Length: 306
Image (cartoon, rainbow, N blue to C red; front, side):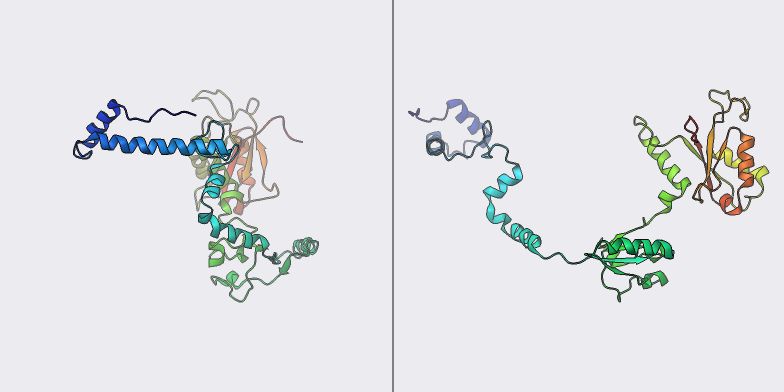
């Protein structure tokens, strides 16, 4: 195709002179204009040759050189293969490397559960199993005598949480390190309420909960410790829409709440209450271990479960 002789407009030259200064352009714009025109002509000629040869890899509507559907990462990998050669070689070597047999450490004190887990691994012959309790359970940082393992399924006290192996993320464990934050009902309710406060526009993940903590050393003196714990919990009462001066323990109209001792499991100590009097009676029936921890008072979801 015929091309107009490339030229640089007078306005563009004047703008360059204002930006760069007359000294930067040598005072004579004709030589500078000729240089720019020559470069533009060479670029146009190169584009024309690629178009005629049909080798252009420019995607429709894309002047970057990327092919249709090609990601930026793939484009740069194709454009600069030498930069990615080492990475590609390492990835290929890892893919071709033989898969080693992973090692599982199983140290569960309950013999029945231990045997169930061991039988599960027997059905997975590519796993090797060790049942030696690490010396970390006795206070050491890491048991160097053990072969590096990939999974530890055992008691919380057996896990090598403070070992370099755990810090490096080189094995999986069956227990969460800060387990009280999840398995203690009081801790979990506290975390959920914090989330609710920080995300008021999102649907709540759990029913509204209040935490009752009896004062340490006064767990058995409920005449003073129970009213104080109820006040600290900010629990509003058992009746919806009640006024500030109304009684909180009207049984007939009270909403159902569920009381859960924080330190128990298997539904031990859980009960339903409709009034402050029933709430106190439930805490009175709790044993010393339950009263030493927190109680979670949670709005019950109706209809009642059977």
